[in-house]
Image 1: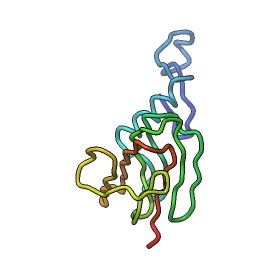
Image 2: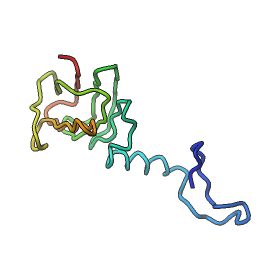
Image 3: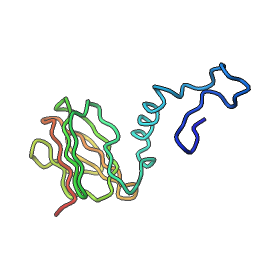
Image 4: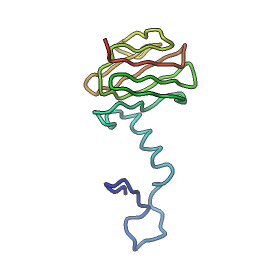
Length: 132
């Protein structure tokens, strides 16, 4: 029961005022953000967003062809939707290995969905760059 304007109603119409039909208040946004982390292709394709992390993200900076961020924990797995193709991913200034599967420290990128998954385990700092 979310209008195109983004307003969430707790009932289908005013005739039933006071009847609870939805959990569309404080946890509405939390559920939506959790869903985008699980289905990153739901995030805007023309924008770059860090959608999910197994750690708390304590800082983040976006530019046209890079993202840098810091997690609370040194070890985390992160999901991003990018509007650029990554050339390198570093953690703690050290290059992470690109792979086909996310096993151990490294990164994988789906160019069709523009989804990047990063696993870092020795440093909380991550740099994603589309620059060669």
